[in-house]
Amino acid sequence: MSHDHNSAGAAHGNTKQYTIGFILSVVLTIIPFGMVMAGGFGRGLLVTVIAITAVAQILVQLIYFLHMNSSSEQRWNVIAFVYTILTVAILLVGSVWIMNYLHYNMMI
Image (cartoon, rainbow, N blue to C red; front, side, top):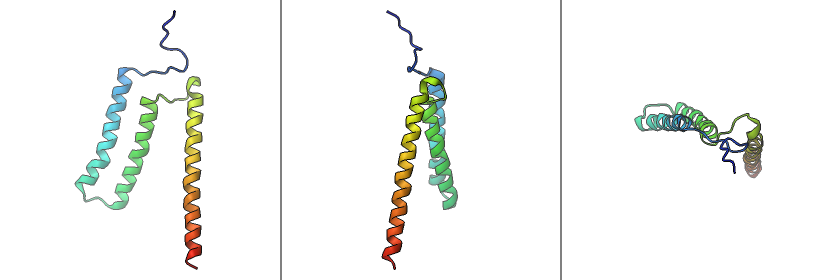
């Protein structure tokens, strides 16, 4: 009976990776929270900072905690993730497009 912890499909991180991921997650949470609580920033700047830190937070979660990378073991997970993102984007953009079209036609 073999206890191979590095077999394909079992990509586990080490303490260093989890610590780096945790610290990055905390920093990426504190930055927009601190800006909103401090006040004095323009709405456009706040929305931009929140959006950028949100995307960075997603990438940190995917890389450091879900261990998604370009290795051959993770290929199907990455493909499934990209498919999910594309499906959600098509649903959101399509819904907004349809609602805008209906709103325009209701105002005529």
